[in-house]
Image 1 (cartoon, one colour):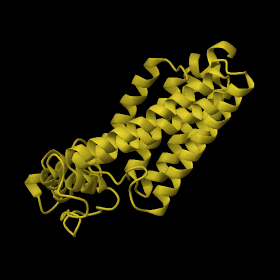
Image 2 (cartoon, one colour):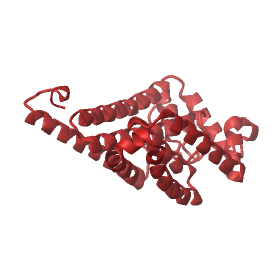
Image 3 (cartoon, helix red, strand yellow):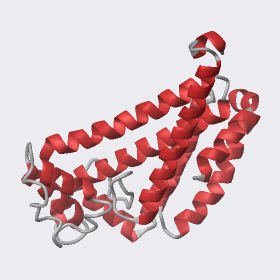
Image 4 (cartoon, helix red, strand yellow):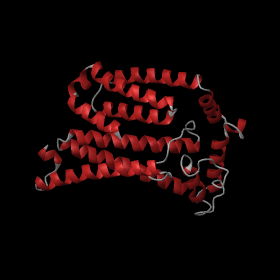
Length: 264
């Protein structure tokens, strides 16, 4: 939760530096690099990736030059490749992702079971509660692989519905942020943008892992995965967006219904 708040405050205070100097780009990334270093020691590769993507997305929306992102992405890519090559369990995840059927009872077990679940679901699923993959076949079916359970029980249509709902949430979060920006509330706008990137990217990664688009990572599906921390944090994100939207609407009423473009 602290990353979007810190980044929003930094982008408001250092707007000119962020848009015109490499120092303005480097300072927050260096501080977050220390945080990510502590996270990767745990190890938690997925959370580190979400934090980096969120920070880069907020810097991009704040107007940082494109060449800085290219340089940073190349550096981060090299770092991530080094982390994979020096860790046996991460390498096993990559090989299991590339060909889960080569070691279906080992590194490719989770992905293989998830794909079987989607295959059983077909178009409309086997019915709510009738899935069998969640019954000790699919590991972490209630958290990391809950999307596979949805695919089995509600089929392709159910999976598409979940993706559309998350996409709608992200679109509305960006809309709230843009509304706040036109009202001159830059801090609130950047917070909304950061939360939108966070939820959108986390949902994308979770769904991508379930269908084999991305290597296996321990990232929950926002608003759906079991677990107090995941659900509580998602509800906090929702409450912050609702608060920003509420204050936007208060300003709309105070300006007697004028659009933000008329009063910005």
